[in-house]
Length: 201
Image 1 (cartoon, helix red, strand yellow):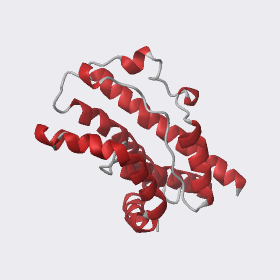
Image 2 (image 1 turned 60 degrees about the horizontal axis):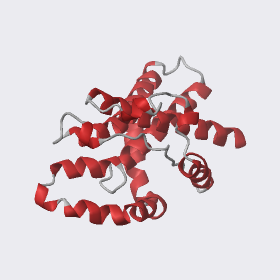
Image 3 (image 1 turned 45 degrees about the vertical axis):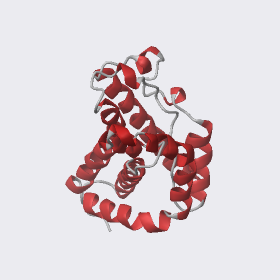
């Protein structure tokens, strides 16, 4: 049991690190060097660990029957982005896209190696797929500070930008509510996607 939790926490940590580094590289490609100058374009987890999101929350949620967490956000300056209209949304989407990509890659490995790979490797790959689907799904929810909110803002007309500040004021509490109160409602969707991706029941 303890070994399973350790493996799960390690997978979460690396998945959220890749998620955050993807934000940084997307910003870099769009003209912002903030993450590069601050040494955050690295997969070294020590550069990205958030004591609460990378350690405390994953442990608590693991004990509660599901696992969730986040890394320290990679900084970027939206005013440096070449595309001011869609740049922030593109940087935001890069994180969930990285998790979806990881889920797809390991789903292909599971399907291609069916009957050829060891049971333990299939289980490990399945955990990687599930965790990355959870991260992608949650981060695409349009509630700040999640990535989905920045994607949503890009579609709002300028006269409605005041909604952003209002949402950001209470966003953290909304995220906690989603994680702890609505997991039972959201989890069937995630497990359906998991089965669709991997073919595992």
